[in-house]
Image 1 (cartoon, rainbow, N blue to C red):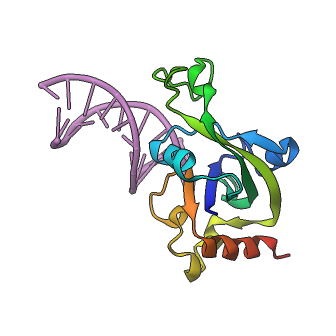
Image 2: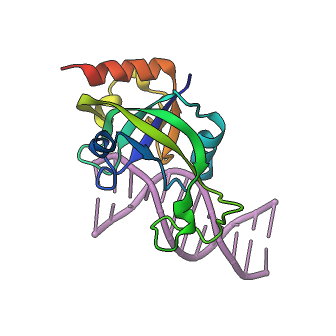
Length: 153
DNA sequence: GCCAACGTTGGC
DNA sequence: GCCAACGTTGGC
């Protein structure tokens, strides 16, 4: 079982949107490294932090579960979509996404600032300078540590 | 809105 | 294959 962190701008799609929808197709990833994590390493049943980026405050908002492996992201084929990629075709979709299911929302957002305050988390990829990946692995220890923070009242 | 960091593109 | 130019991300 692997653990992940998925970024989303809450103005675009927030943990509350996922809670409402129950499940969602994680479309719009247009970075090869992020895609490769989804297509090569994500497994059904893996858990992921749902991270709000460009938010006030930015931080981890809750947990989702991978319920379907990566399938072609057809939004790349649609010129009307924000993440349209003219190089993508039905035969070679290039971009893929997994399907997520809502698990829970943290009692309080675990902010980026607070994550930086724990030496236990200093190796988290999301905390590294210049880290822009939208899909990244999290270790089991990091996952359990942050999960506890998120469940505190 | 600024801007540092990073990924991608394309001319050569 | 190099690398400058450009576009995007995302914290602040």
